Length: 192
Length: 264
Image (cartoon, rainbow over all chains, first blue to last red; front, side):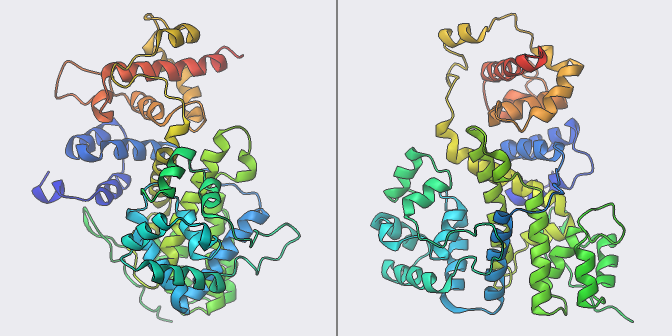
């Protein structure tokens, strides 16, 4: 292993492992020896690669269509570059590395204005503002604008029930995303 | 007719600059010349073994570059790509059975969100992680699966009953009795052919913790639990746990398979 290789990032090491022609014991052993700092991820990836990829041929259900439509709408908005909603998107993207215990779908709900701003504790707003290097007031303004820009899944046409456009509380968003009560209370007090 | 140049990949990895695989490049050169209607028809073919199927590597390229297509076509292509992604993920409706459903549907949400965040952010700031999907889509998915599972497990770890004392790697005596644990329990049982056949398909099921899945996987690959040779790679070393913890978790995992083995 060269000095350069020893400095490879987690992403580079995992990508390289994924692209190996053989994923048997010898290959994994070599990577575990060369990159012990990523051993847990290497074992996890090796396991993922050993599992078959199941492709479901059944038609997509209503919920899947609604999810896809919501993304396609944002995609066309992003490519037309529409103001503050896409700014928020970029800022939240920066949070990905620091988001820790907050699921990404909660950030998506925030960005789309589906969370009642009044239910977000001040400590949470302050922490997010700190992470994206903004003032709390500016963040609140952007979240409020997101409500008017982010109309959720209106284009969905089906006899099945579309995703609800109702706003929910911040804690409900965390709970719906499966965050455990213990971690939820940490997040609510701005610890993330 | 000469094909327009295919935008090369920019990602630099361990072995240098990524390049589209020749089969992807050849097909892309053909696809970018097709009228939008024909292109969509081809991309709509869902099954790999049908002639004219367009691999997802090409779909990712077409969505990212919108290569000469109309805006509406690019949106349709994204719809097809996301539909394929969802077809690889467990669905909420199939999983609403027992406490595991939440974990698995959260996993699906995490993968879907991570992928779409990349696609949505890409026009503003080129995301070279997506280059990997143009190179080998299936392996890109596996990478996403790994990150999503880690995230979901970390988030929900506190909900999982903690059965093993971390310091000693032992179960409480009470629990050992309940589970019918004994020192004579044969860890080599995992080598038995019928157990090997049974264990792989069960890996994604609820009965194993993340640690147990990792231990079983390494055992099936042929790694020893421990070794007197300090240079030898072992399961304990790879997972940074004591030998005893590894043995206890392997026993627990095997015990949870007993009812299936016994046909109960």
